[in-house]
Image (cartoon, one colour):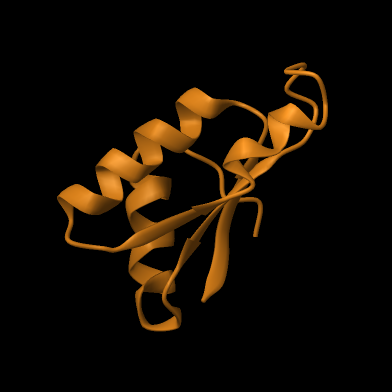
Length: 71
């Protein structure tokens, strides 16, 4: 698995997940429940992971929708 996206904005994670699943790309969110540790302040980023074989296509889908992957 490769990291596709890292953000503190949960709406970006939700939007990216919906876009990728719509394209048939399986996604795995990490660090979703870490807000318990930071007191729900949203300072710890969440990550979105995809399979190695889907990484290039997933980055293209996010780029087409103006979601920066930072890579």
